[in-house]
Image 1 (spheres, helix red, strand yellow):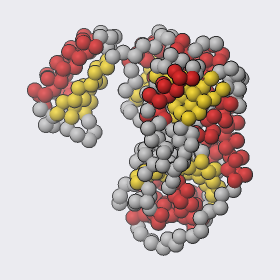
Image 2 (cartoon, helix red, strand yellow):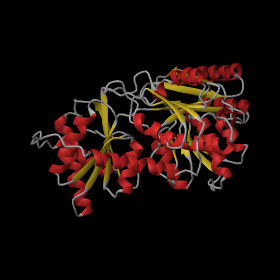
Image 3 (tube, helix red, strand yellow):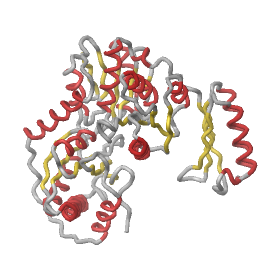
Image 4 (cartoon, helix red, strand yellow):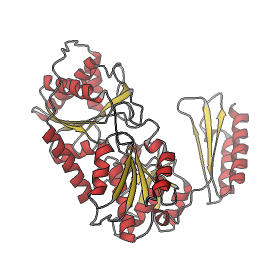
Length: 448
């Protein structure tokens, strides 16, 4: 049986299996039938999409399939991924269905499903859908495209914006100038409306989606444009989203990039000061800069690291009861509010910290220093566990001792190539380059 679901749902080129019209229909029908079996009644779905030109027909095909399986579905039209997750819970739908490929180019698309809890559907349901698709049953008959209820979709969007405002404290942004790169994606209308509703002067750009320009040379993957806009307009802050707005990155008033690590530092201080960080911890991944760990420690906050991926961050947040977690990419999770990363919520929290403190973002990030980093790839003939090779184990121990609490070594294998990756962070660029090359040479001699 082919595995169609990855870590972020089903994703691929729109129009090509498994995102061709017939297969999308089957996905909708399978989810409807299997959810009905679980619930003992016909399920209710809410769907939403980003701005890709394929989004409309994929959403339509899915909804036709869901109807064939006995489910009712409503569309929120263009809305963010976390927006769909919110709607599923708030309006008591059984699943929230997102049609999006996040930061990928317009040719791609995807389908991911959220339970009302905000968690993605479980492995058992995913495997069941894959089995239904593998079984064939090629009885798909294209029907008429669903008719969008504009007033209902508008109500959904308004409810989501109200939720965002209510999830933060009481503050205003009158006189505050914000540059917003909307990535020609799902945030194009919602983000400017959110910030203007708080009194901000908003300068939106890349907010004219045409179905093909989503993520194209814009958004959170191309921050140079936001840096230029902040400098040109004298904005107090710039924020950039990706296509489905589940992440946000920033540019401060001086034109410097503020990534997810720096944003976690700002939000951890805000939450600690308000007594909202009772755990005394923040969750991030092994790729977060050691500068974040050192900065948090200066405030008595422990950084807990996980494997790379928002799934692992969320798992640890739920396991340990920590109140804040995220990734360098700007995918931040506030589990007491939502289990889904939300770029607009992240932006609100950063703006809240600025508004309540009266400080500029460049001042809010003070105390966080990004340490130099070096990455060396070593081609190997075998992927033997490092601690089972005496020479590598000894060299690694010596490297960590040399860093002596002011640096970090991350040694791992590539998941797709015969490469060992040596990543070192530390105070001095020349020192860490020397340490990385020494360890790389040891690995090459032992495993090359």
